[in-house]
Image (cartoon, rainbow, N blue to C red; front, side, top):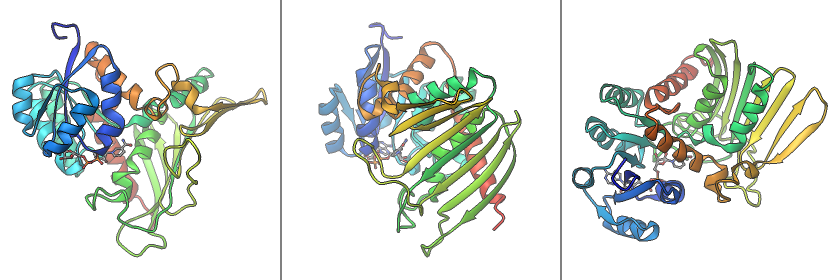
Length: 338
Ligand SMILES: NC(=O)c1ccc[n+]([C@@H]2O[C@H](COP(=O)([O-])OP(=O)(O)OC[C@H]3O[C@@H](n4cnc5c(N)ncnc54)[C@H](O)[C@@H]3O)[C@@H](O)[C@H]2O)c1
């Protein structure tokens, strides 16, 4: 903690996602001091600093880290721009948060996980789906009956563009975007991956990018997980109040109880009582606030990262854990029966 009792943090990146989902939670927390931000673009840096009341801006992140000496750094850049600043900050002993996908390939996140380990610092990848308040609340309801036995995660969208959501072609769609669903499946299941079978297809859209992926994964704790990631389904229309067209839906099944969770819309619990409970998913995050970052998990993810630093605890979605999510993506491709 700093002299003023606040945790001092800095940002690298003043782009779309940072402004949309990260500056807001960080600047809303009274125990956090956002001391400076850095972006290659001085215009973006100045605009963002003005918007969120950040006192200092930089174009050179090394100079910022030297002068501001933050305990933690949020690096919200494209995957091609993650490895260098994240390695630098970790090797200076700073805690680091990065967005997904955590780099350009599995090797890069393995390198970052190694630096985090040898420098004994805390790390987090932005898998905010783990922190959706409706998800954590209803997962806990199922687990009140005992262990989860099966989970399904469906992330269904629609496009005619094989290059959509690929970080300008840096990665395939499953890795760049569907990684959220793969990570959510792993997190909900809770065990280590033991066996994978999959069906990976490229449907309708000429080009090299797989756009329809179904997988079954068996975990060491006996949980069976099913994944459907698709860019060529009906998805769902953009409904009033929802943040995106398409669905991200999880089913969590335990002993005679099932939850369905859709962060943007409705969630349900059905049990052997026969009564279906239906919830507006947004209400679960209301105690923190009523903006999308409160029901989509971004605020709770930031809160967890800050709390973990204050308590010297590794967040569950740390870099070493992200390695496992990326490995599962590779296993899904390798096990495809096509
Ligand atoms: N978690 C989610 O659901 C979710 C949703 C959307 C985007 N994202 C991720 O967020 C990341 C950022 O996406 P974006 O759309 O905000 O990109 P962007 O291009 O709008 O912003 C990135 C910014 O980082 C700056 N930058 C990069 N390297 C830098 C460096 N070394 N020093 C200073 N500035 C640097 C760039 O100048 C740019 O302004 C991507 O990895 C994307 O996958 C995640």
